Image 1 (cartoon, rainbow, N blue to C red):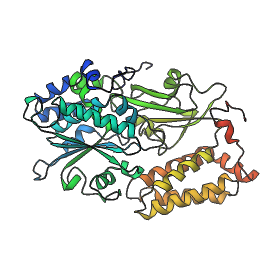
Image 2 (image 1 turned 45 degrees about the vertical axis):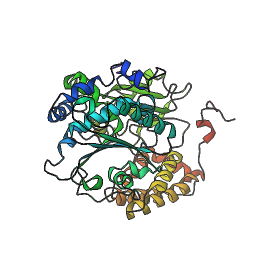
Image 3 (image 1 turned 60 degrees about the vertical axis):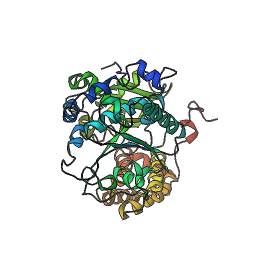
Image 4 (image 1 turned 90 degrees about the vertical axis):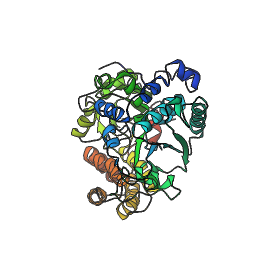
Length: 434
């Protein structure tokens, strides 16, 4: 498996890819016309048959999620697109919305029609102003062209689409915290059940999907479920955008079938930066257990990565060479989680705080073997005991790094300081201290 599958990314190199004219030139909104001639239930079944799984990290079957909406609820149905991309290392939804916002808009319209919703929202983080402007311009163009609003393309179907900007909180990437924020409250996760499919936005049945998931819908409807399942693996069908960052020669977005390996992706990306070797990497962002060079040939699909001890997550492949201190990297991630914890539940609020304090001491060479056992015990008291997955994610780099690099932790307190020169890991240093 050495070929890329440019579907969502195929027009990114065109100067007007983000405009309505550029999108329509490539067949944009053609699928919408076909979809509006279909029965909504047939569209849901097509997505189910395709095997499309959520591209936001959890990998839940998209069509199945759509099917959970209660048929007899008196409340309006809502579609909410989670565009609050915040996971460290993840950078796929932002460039997708920047380069081709109309594929997301078309996906929203088709998906909303399929679930019989007349109100849709794209919740995007407020810091990415350039993306917000692109989205707002695309939505305005779609309204002007008759793809949004009343009686879309004469079909009798109405849809209102709102681009909502959040204030920039990692916790709002969690679906129920996102709903609270969308309703005007402080973004904090809700206790489940009830699940959003039953009582979500404004108490109505709500589907929440990731940007890449919804943007994949037009291609699936256009080409058919069999086309989608011809790529990827049996249980992880289709293609996905893999974000390679860090110590790699050509970092960027690589759209490829699920099941490709890091070794194959590195071959396409020119390998690890010259003169260095792979030390550790994340398969799905910082909230997934880290891998080493022993995992280069693990197929990057949900089942294989899980069987190897990690999670596919958002396919954020952060690459670190031998110049990087694992303890320092885990400390930085832990500082992020401590800062972004909403504080609603004790295990996450207190646990991430103590992660930060203990890892600071360890990185400075002031720890002990007992501290490592305390970190693992602390992790046991966070994992599975928090309101949402933020706490679980915070434990992943800590536990996996101690498992894989315990000797490196020991080196810190045996020599009374960090054995690594942080300047050597920088790009401008080229591997040498300057």
